[in-house]
Amino acid sequence: MICPYCQHEETKVLETRETTDVETRRRRECQKCLKRFTTHERVEQKPIFVIKRGDNRELFDREKIVKGLMNSCQKRPISITDIENLSKQIEDKIRISGDEEIKSSKIGKLVMTRLKKLDKVAYIRFASIYRDFADIEDFKEEVLKLKK
Image 1 (cartoon, one colour):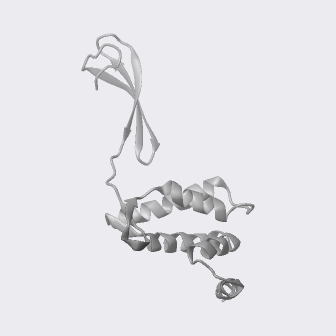
Image 2 (spheres, helix red, strand yellow):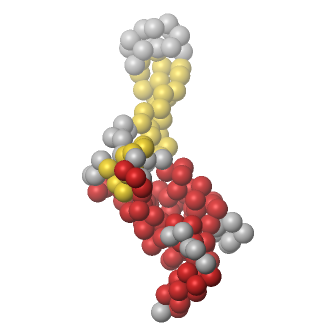
Image 3 (cartoon, helix red, strand yellow):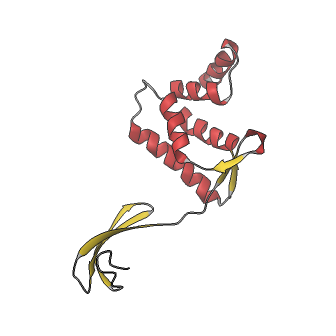
């Protein structure tokens, strides 16, 4: 690691901490000028492409899942932590599959499966947009499925 102060190439690691599943924080000291600095190492993940309706492709963005969940869970007793955990579970499942491409419909199904267990009202809200409910009958059918 190159020192950001004097550009010397030799540094010593003083402390290492795992900050997240994919990031490590290291406190370093330059062997020449003795100044200290922090680095963050991240696991480089391969990109995943989402195949949208109409076969358009875009990069997977977990924040889109979080936004959809936040809209569905608005005014429900669901914490931000629950939403973050749910979106992380979905991303982990996608990454574990090893696929480089995934259909947006499959992501929607993954969200709905987990959301149904978390909160049924939020599930209905999400389903109404994801499945593009046309009228009250679509809502009634989905609620009846939940009761089974």
